[in-house]
Amino acid sequence: RLAQLRLEEAIEALPVGFELWDDENRLVMCNSLLREQYPAVAPLLKPGVSFIDIVRGSMRLGGERIEAAREQEWLEARVAQRASSSAPKLQYQQELARWLQVYERRTPSGHVVGIRFDVSELVQREQQLREVNTRLATHEARLRAIVTTAGTAIITADEQGRMHSANRAAEQLFGYPLHELVGADIFKLIGDSRGGSRERQMETFFGAAQAGEGTNEHEILVRHRSGAPLALHLSISRVFVGDEREFVIVVTNFSERKRYEDELRRVNNQLASTSTTDRVTAAANRQLFDQRLAAEWTRAVRTHQPLALLMIDIDEFRRYNEHHGTIAGDRCLHDIAQVLRRTIRRSGEIVARYGGEEFAILLLNTDIKGAEAVARRCHGLVASAQIPHGRSETAPTVTVSVGVASVQAAKSLDAQMLVEAAEQALVRAKKAGRNRIERALAPA
Image 1 (cartoon, rainbow, N blue to C red):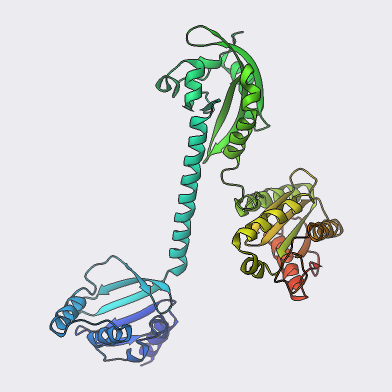
Image 2: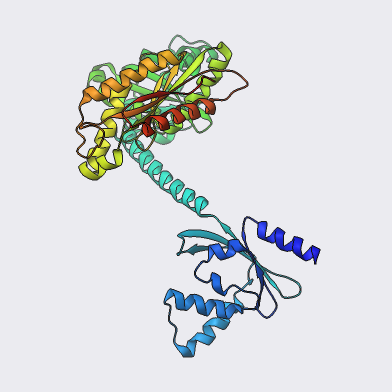
């Protein structure tokens, strides 16, 4: 009896729905989590009840009707399906709007054991990931179309100087078909007329870009495939494609430089910011913020400097969307982001959309007093923007609440501590009536 009791306690403590049926498809036992997963039929889940009775009860509750002549045949087929495969089944629980992963196994004695995992979060993440991948694919296709149809020659090459891609403008400019460019040495096109070793050529053309220190600019004289001279301007930048580094080489004739200058800048910016810019606000996105926070925290630990963070939330933004509409809401988010960007002045500092209507500002080498000064500047600039808010209970215009924190970086701490401190301060600012600034209760 003690062993039985311990077994029942263990099954009850499982973080999954558990069920055990005998060889005649009668319920032997189940835990309370299974009943929570199926609240409509929970009163029926008692030892001794048959599986067919459970299915019939579920059909009645769900309003499902099957002709009497076919009902028994359908029920027998449903029973035969049980534990017929070792593969898990994904089941949508409509009552709770949850997804369950169902595993059923038959024991040597003919019993059926079932467990049911709640995988709703995994399914939602998969759906979100699918949406993100779709958006990225669309964005990549758009970039590819821009690059392909651009009137300026654009070439990509790896760190050994082998060309990976070239657009139609590059084919026309140099006179080589695409199949002769892809895989060929870049110096086939831009070789140093002064000669020299391969290492010297790489250093000449890719030096600063190769080291990740900026963009290389060159004005060179080369020849078209036909032998005609070409006076070209090269702009060489390094980008990351996954874990690999590539060079983007933009080539223009001197005579066409001015005409295509704006287009080149737009293409380069799109190539550099494919996955780091928030589409609505044009500020940094959450991914870039997390990367920069991690990098600056490491640097601050090394240099023994403080790091500060402002968490900023637009007050009553849901009411704003309901009253003014989502298009106006997106415009409001964009305008607030631009206002906040005016408050940072040092290289390396960042304004990011942290999520929804919440923004984050990362400040380097800044103590709590300095961070509060920036927070006051943010607060004042937003108020000066005078963006009307027709449903606010706080003010007739859009306002923000700000949480401020500053931490002396150290190896014994982590960057998440700074984020949590700023978020807690923001929560206090909103609870205290919004449209205000609160600092972290105590420095870390």
